[in-house]
Amino acid sequence: MTEAAENISLDDTAVSVAEPLRTHPMSLAVKAANSLQNALFPMAAVFFSQRDEPWAIYAALGIGLLVALMSAGFGYVAWRRLTYTVGEEDIRVESGVLSRAARSVPFERIQDVSLEQSLIPRLLGLVSVKFETGAGGGEDLALKFLSENEGERLREVIKARKDGVTHVSSPGEDSNEPVEAAPAEVIFAMGEKRLLIFGLFEFSLAVFAVIAGLFQYAETFATIEFLDPDRFTDWLTGTGGFLSGLGLVTQIASFLAGLLVFFVVGSITGLVRVLLRDWDFVLERTEQGFRRRRGMFTKTDVVMPIHRVQAIKVVTGFIRRRFGWHGLKFVSLAQDSGSASHDVAPFAQMAEIAPIAEIAGFAVDPEQGVEWQRGSRNYRIDSAIISIILLGLIACGVGTGLYFSGVANPLYAGLILSIGILLAMREMFLWRYDFNAIDGRHFFVKRGWLAPKLDVASRVKLQSVEIARGPLAQRRGYATLKLGLAGGNLDFEGLPVERARELREAILASIARTDFSELSR
Image 1 (cartoon, rainbow, N blue to C red):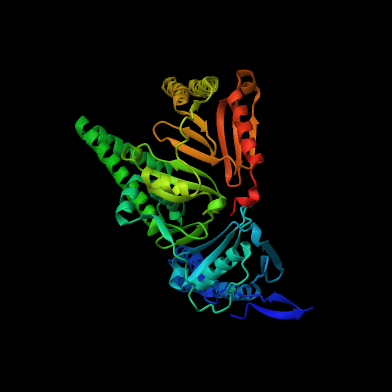
Image 2: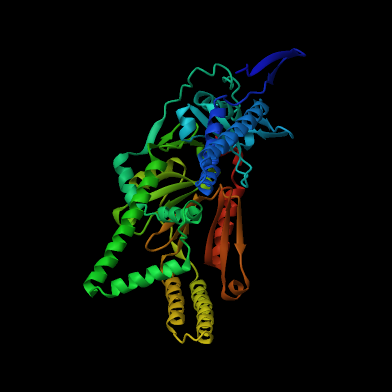
């Protein structure tokens, strides 16, 4: 690494001139490994398409070698042409081989600096540094890859310069010396036992989706046509005949055995996903705010400043709720792996969630004397009527189509209409479990019966407050209150219009008397 800056005297003033830096040279090895992965499919395609020829294996290896050499050559040139410069007020990244592109991001726009390690970079001691700007739409900036110490040092430099601290070791200076982390307080962690319990509740069908995706490419490597309709018809006919020959008890037992296998596979898939994603999950309170680290093969290290947490979400499932398990998410200016919410306590008891929320400046219960209010009953009635009408029209269309096709069976149309009736009954029932409340600091929205969800927004950190009313809502006397957050929206539909106006005035009054320059202190 070159020196990061040199002091030049100009009119008796020390001016810091930053020099461009490059990512770690070992990042080329990571890109080479990724190029080999990309070469596997064309290699397999060449081999299986020419497998009857004696030179098929050599052609496949030649394709792989050609792809690897081309990727290595382009990767080296691209690495030489990519530089980043850490200035006093911004970070600048220049890249491009034939056409150059330069992007400068002021430190004040950077909401978060996160470190991520997938398997191969982790083995090489490298990290990907991602700068969250809160702009969305793919506007974030990333450096792939730096050494672990360099990535940590870069994060500390940006945090210090955002806070106006000038005496800090810049990236590139003494990069071999480890960065001493400030003492941190562990406020939540998940060990192996809790991860195991968590995984059992995370039922997932991802494995079936993967198998279905593999079937799309199976015909390339085998002579079996998996999507042949005649093959499936013969198989179902044979299986149906076999099952019809069994007794009723055996048929029921076979059905239950199939459900059991389905449940076991889904549970194992969910458990694997939890272990890979949340291994060594630790949430700490540091000088910079909350620091969350997790991951088995892909390890992430995210720091969330306390003052940038705009809302919290408390979620649960209809089964895990019976055992007292909930999840806590922060809605922040930065994003967490493509999601607007950061998982800070994905599997915890309410006694563990409440202190974390309190540190962030939120409460999971409103102040004493605050009354929970329901939404508009007219909104639920209208939603129920619309559900019946829509499903009724679909049922009529299906019934008409079956009639003209010669199938006079009203069962299908009746089934669709029954779904509409159930949806209407659900709308009317859920009215009893939609609540909102407001106290001196927060706005609360609680929804759901089997798996209730709680959203809590700070009255002073909201970006906007909007009342939306369609033609039907105007005639029926209800509205939708839309609360604007930098990390998304918090909407509450079907409020009585008087309640919506009352909430808007209260929130706007809180925003008007707040000095936002003091929130980050």
